[in-house]
Amino acid sequence: MTTPALPLTDPALSELLTGRLALVEERLRDAVTHTDVLADTASRHLVNAGGKRLRPLLCLLAAQLGDGRRPEVVDAAVVVELTHLATLYHDDVMDSAPLRRGAPAAHEVWGNQVAILTGDLLFARASGLVAGLGPEAVRIQAATFERLCLGQLHETVGPADGADAVEHYLQVLADKTASLIATSARFGAMFAGCPADVVDTLVQYGEKVGVAFQLADDVIDLAVDGAATGKTPGTDLREKVPTMPALLLRARAARPQAAQADRDLVALLDSDLSGDEALAQAVAALRAHPVLDETRDLAGRWAREAVTALGTLPPGAVRDSFVSFTEALVDRAA
Image (cartoon, rainbow, N blue to C red; front, side, top):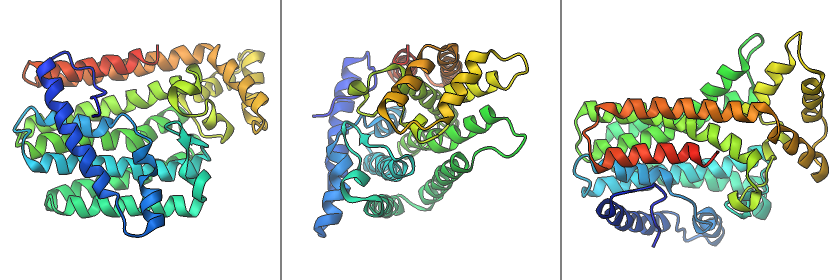
């Protein structure tokens, strides 16, 4: 049975969510099943690889502020995880990532076209499930999907001339990551019958904590060994995908009084990093640079703002769990 990845200090709440998560896991595996052998095998690839199931957990936790027993809550939790999994198939193709959750990425096994189409199949299954949740859920899912696409589009094309690259990147994170996290919490509260003000609070929290989550991932990608994350360190550097440490470095190097070492490091990042030795050198250099701590600090600031947003929730184990999760999110990048 999957254990909740959220740090839950209340044993009764932990036991409850463990049981609900097991039901989500069962429904998730049913949702990716296909009669077509290739579609079935490819769709199960990332489900079988495991994962934290963070988004369905946030959905289930939010639902405990209302009637978390409603069957629509489980359906919503499956929808957000299917949507997330679909984006991973697409992201790994865009980023040429060789690993995902410790297993070969789908495009490494079946090629880019099959990986992209598998992601599309999962989006289709998510759409079928969300249709059963009603028109408002469909509208929210469509708006979230639009933001996911816009985030990837804006990451791909980069900031416009003269635009602030850091602010552009924060908007990318808000769309690519925070939008679905916010929807996860929103669906949980909404389908548990929570009042509108509680739903709105959790949306605000999700938007903040989603950005903090990705900033922490930017640190982990450089600071933590790949064996612990299931991903190859520095993949974004190799594929020239911007991350916050690299953007902060470029901002430093662009100053008239910039240190030559910073300019040299930018030149290294812009060089051919296809070789393992060159990539390891670039990762080590960024790992030792102050911009990594600056990114940690930025993740902490967004996390504190997320906790502040929770202030209107009723006190108790559910709010405490949201706070604990937010603090643990930053601690993992320490």
